[in-house]
Length: 246
Image (cartoon, rainbow, N blue to C red; front, side, top):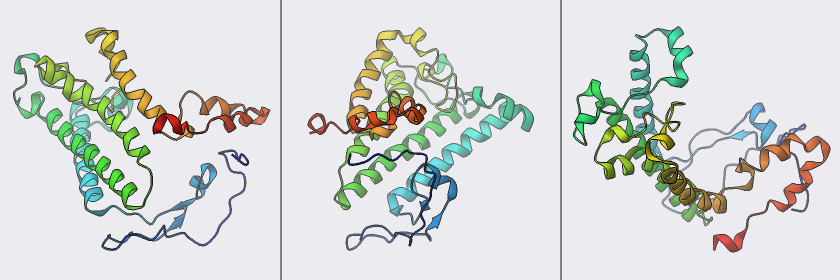
């Protein structure tokens, strides 16, 4: 790095909106008018938009909204549509997977069917969005690092909710929901620490190699916390290890 600038910007500069790099011929145009958001400018670029979704991005967004709708309706039904209880118990609410006696069969909707449907739409949304991110990087001549980092997170998600239950032959072995605080808590107790450690060691090296250094949950937060003491100078050493990613 030639110089370092703290992530928390004290001065925001307003320029003409940037409409993005030129798209290849035949690509759908970007949608929306660029706007400047003051809160975004405190931690980075204040400009929001225009957005390029395309066919894959639109399908992914629709699947994600469907998954959220199913999960939200199940959350509301579990507290008898009480808004106060919904807010109070929100971190612990989750659509439960089918009971053990259903094995890997399709259960009734109120006994795990909604969990399967929400999982289907959420999985399709993630996979299609990965395809969208990968294609956009290739179309614009960028590296595919973010796509492969995202793929490692998807692999962890699929391991908890699909691969492991399928190998064990029972949907009840899956985690309730990725939005619940109780999703992965009992997993080490149920399947052993070795299984969790193996899965994580498979995913984390790829994410460490490909994700931006600023997303490192182990290094970046402490450095930002002590930036007023000069600790941010260590950021110069947080460059991407390119020889590990090739």
